[in-house]
Image (cartoon, rainbow, N blue to C red; front, top):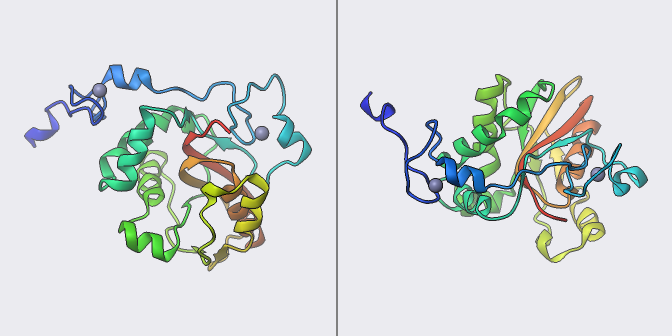
Length: 223
Ligand SMILES: [Zn+2]
Ligand SMILES: [Zn+2]
């Protein structure tokens, strides 16, 4: 197939893509890695040893969060494309960008994309976290649980709420529809914001028998 031999186009600048990633070297170099983040919640606060102060006071129910990039331009444009284009090219790029960070984490038994509400999925036509999870699963060689966890409530948009209100807002928002007994699960999302979603999903999965839950996301917001 000839098209496979041609270099891809960079989705950010339309220049020549690199390494069949549809992203050029220059644009890839503009992405800001989330270095020195808290190993537990991935917040980009420099942590000297152990975890960040918030995790020391109240450790989240997920064991750790691997989130290799910061949610700043130009990566924000990749996320926008993942959510509002048809998302496949961006999902492939993001999974490729995450590859090294995920390869140094222990492989989970199961990958589980953060589910959208039914309404949001119908509006968008797809779940962007599921697209990303599918690409990651191909790299890691682990199955994806596309069903089994549902968002059952359409809560107030999280954007307008502070961290404590986000947690209350999401309480009981997810329900497990299968047994996750003995599973070590990686929850996949595109952007990790406060971690409230990850925390609520983790509680739901641990309740349904999961042994551990960790978070794999492409990008972390600054706070
Ligand atoms: Zn470029
Ligand atoms: Zn932390």
